[in-house]
Amino acid sequence: MRRLRHNSRIRRLIREQSLTANDFIFPLFIHAGEGIKEPVSSMPGQFQYSLDQLSSVLDELVSLGVLGVMLFGIPAEKDPQGRDAYSEQGIIAQAIRFIKGKTPSLLVISDVCFCEYTDHGHCGIVNEKTGHLDVDNDATLPLLAEQAICHARAGADMVAPSGMMDGMVAAIRQGLDASAFQHIPILSYAVKYASAFYGPFREAAGFSLEFGSRETYQMDPANGEQALREAQMDINEGADMLMVKPGLAYLDTLFRLKQAFPGVPLSIYQVSGEYAMIKGACQQGWLDEKAVVLESLTAMKRAGANFIITYFAKDVCQWLMEEKG
Ligand code: PBG
Image (tube, protein in one colour):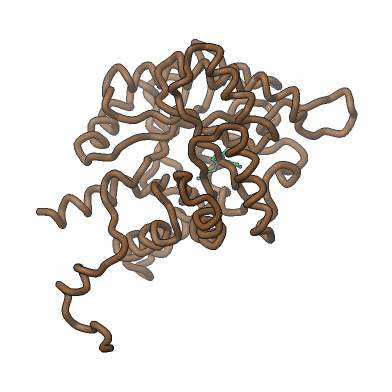
């Protein structure tokens, strides 16, 4: 047997993975208020947008063929319960209605979590009575269901609970089904690691933790097998698809899930810190941006991702278009 070294046509013929515009979801940060298009300094090229500034990026996404967006809200006001997240007049409900009205073809996935909406920055409500300041898992569940229903009512095509609360998928499924949203799928952030790669997201989504840490509910980066249990639980609770997050450092986890649950659609989130790392090096001229982005994303598909949430979604779709000519 000879290795196929040189012939680029043969290489293309036997290539196992290729990227298409259908593979990508673009995260969008929506800021309450008006006239805001605020650059995120630790994520060059990314912005927080108020709704009145959103049209041009929506048009751009559609014309590039990007399939959908994942929405994060920065509300005008935060409180201990994160009420804005499940209010009809909240920033995300408004954003979903706006996007679905303007660009109905764009798939809208809403992040269902509380960290951007609570004044303490945790992913759920905090039980002050017990004295130990930690998230109250069970008290958060009905509010997550309420949030998902609110987003579905506004027109979300899919909800993505990201808070890693136990029982969140079941609670949201029940809530959606009881409100005539049986058809809305749940993309669960089943395997979300307590990662330092979320650093720039704190600036982008405008929040910080006032106390404690997320290590009580996010997964230890040292663990791989635990991911299988987390995934199994979410599948049992009715998750339609799963996500692994962050991306590049956790491809082994994604691969494990693909082997263990071959029929379950999987996604991976190339997070803010991964974006910042690539952008930072490329701005110095130390790496070739297009090459490293395409290589990283192809590796994610090779590891088992059906789709990828990435801040590079627009760039990749642009490059794919240019290659087609
Ligand atoms: C939680 C959430 C986070 C991210 C997505 N959803 C932050 C966290 O869990 O601390 C991070 C995404 C990124 O870093 O790009 N709602």
